[in-house]
Length: 338
Image (cartoon, rainbow, N blue to C red; front, top):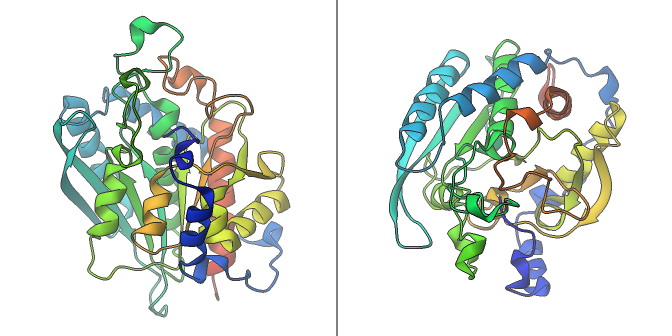
């Protein structure tokens, strides 16, 4: 995850011009009003989601070319095969900010639609699964070149989507669901390098957006999760999501409010963020929003890019809130009879 001043590198006017020139799908008005409180969904098990987060952390540091990366990739693939019809590992090359050549692994899992459902529509859900090499925001400068667990920044979003896959597999939707775990997202230029470059981040989503796992891939809309396990969850309407996919964002925030999570999903417009959804929107042309932590006065959350981003600071109730909002949205859109 990246500091939210990235778009100061280019002008906001340029961004908005590019965003409004994108797909109309993301800015279309929501379908006829749905009472989301009555939408039936499979249950979301917060303990299960939390265990999936912990299992990723237990693999070790999930940094490129490391034993932890290989171990966690095997774990994710094995788990997703339990619930999904296909699982693809997209191996790709990447060059980090300092010229280091690494290999990344995007993991793409698909849950097919229920039998007899019409084709042509699908939803993409995403999160990054790598952890950052450098705790460059740690209060102790001695830690600035050290890796950290990435329990919230990375593993939390993946854990929610793993539990969602388990739930949806038992009660399929009328459209396919593609779940993508992007790799090499969080290896952008560290603070101590005293330089900045937008495209040093999000290598996995950049690669996938230019080289989708299926030729001419498209989706109706997408939702990205990042840092969704904090103990004080607060998600705002960040600017990239608003400009590329305002209709989707407004719908998801309305669902959250309807089912009692309005204090977490705050109806506030906030600055743009460079995250995987930016490249999915800009390069792949798929309207995707970002559900990402926003803590006033801080860079995302207290332990962002520090040694403190560990399981001690992951709240299973936050995971549950995001999971339930996603399930209500999906089953409201594409549940039985949709």
